[in-house]
Image (cartoon, rainbow, N blue to C red; front, side, top):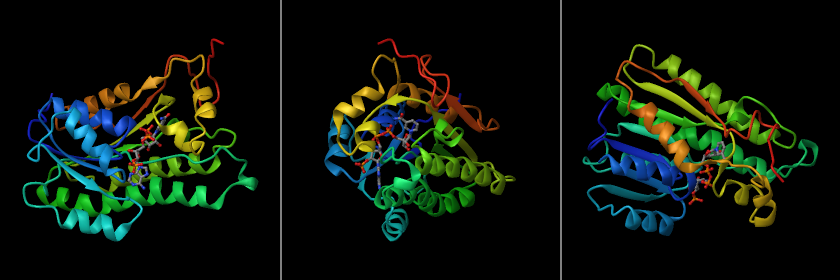
Length: 256
Ligand SMILES: NC(=O)c1ccc[n+]([C@@H]2O[C@H](COP(=O)([O-])OP(=O)(O)OC[C@H]3O[C@@H](n4cnc5c(N)ncnc54)[C@H](OP(=O)(O)O)[C@@H]3O)[C@@H](O)[C@H]2O)c1
């Protein structure tokens, strides 16, 4: 197992759910964390809870959709933070569950800009340094939605299918370097995901998980940690994981 002590790990979407759970597992093994999200106060709360200091965490308020801001964040990292070892492209969201022909343009643009373009911007600005240093690992958070489309999932599923293709393409383009590329693709995980999908309609969000034992953010962080700690010659390309109560994007066992 590779040690992550003092490794620099940049996690997007660290203010909630899977990203925040990743911060905890990686902080526990002595990694130094660059934590990125729009809600800065949530990052501060997380840093306090995990007892992180300015030596062990650098908090960045950043909207990953803003290419200029992503470039400026990465190019202005101080020398003690600039040699990023692991990039976890986790920031992402679904918006709505409408039929495609009734879909909301703003929802589409937010998903495409965050899940595809945001992930690309971070990758484009961070990976050249990894190539130069001959060291690095990019871990993209995809979804089973990238493997199977479900009714109303249309554009969200399209963005996650794009993440799958981008992860495969990046792996091919980095062949010949020691840099690793992994896609972790979960099924149902209970986080703020459904509240965000339904624009704060918590009753509708709760129904998603009713009668099911979903995965937790900690389950996903644990899987990401496994991928990040394999020996240097091992690349975990893709992990698909679901709760036992789920068999596909549409087949869920509800004990109601
Ligand atoms: N939960 C599931 O069932 C599930 C299943 C498969 C895949 N996933 C994927 O897992 C990833 C994490 O989601 P989650 O379940 O942990 O949901 P979550 O609790 O809603 O967390 C999403 C995170 O993404 C950040 N984010 C969203 N838009 C952003 C932007 N424009 N710029 C920077 N950060 C942004 C949010 O932070 P701010 O709002 O503070 O910016 C938040 O920290 C997503 O890519 C999601 O598609 C989730």
